[in-house]
Image (cartoon, rainbow, N blue to C red; front, top):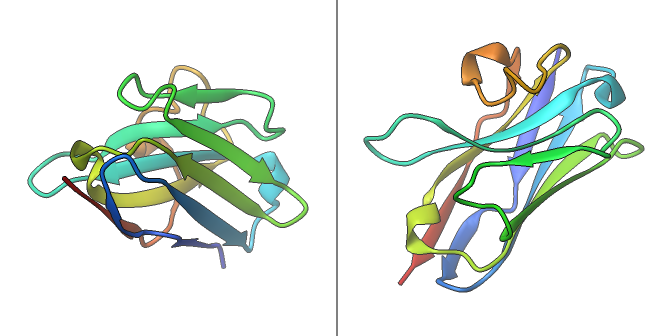
Length: 126
C-alpha cells in the first residue's frame, strides 16, 4: 500500500520560511517523479514544483520560482519543498504526489499523478 505523508506545514509571517517533507512508503521511491501541488480555498489545485527521479531536474511554477526549492533524498524515501520569502498568497493546503510516468508535458497536471498525500496546511500572515 502506497503512502505519502506530508509534514512541516504551519503558520508563518510573510517573508518567513517553511520546509515541507513528504515521506513515501510502499513504492520504489527512486523511480518516481515527485510533484508538489497546492489548493487555496475556493480555488483549483495548482502545480507548485516537481523533481525527477534522480533529483537532477526540478521544475517550478512561475509564482514560486526563485523562492521555493524542491529536493529529494532517495535513501530516506523523502521529498522536500523548501519555501522561502513566503507571501500571504502562498497560503494553501500543500500536497505531494508521486507518479512513475509523468514527463515534462504532464507533470503539472494533477490528474496524471497516481498517488497523493493528505496535505498539510500552510498559512502565511501579512
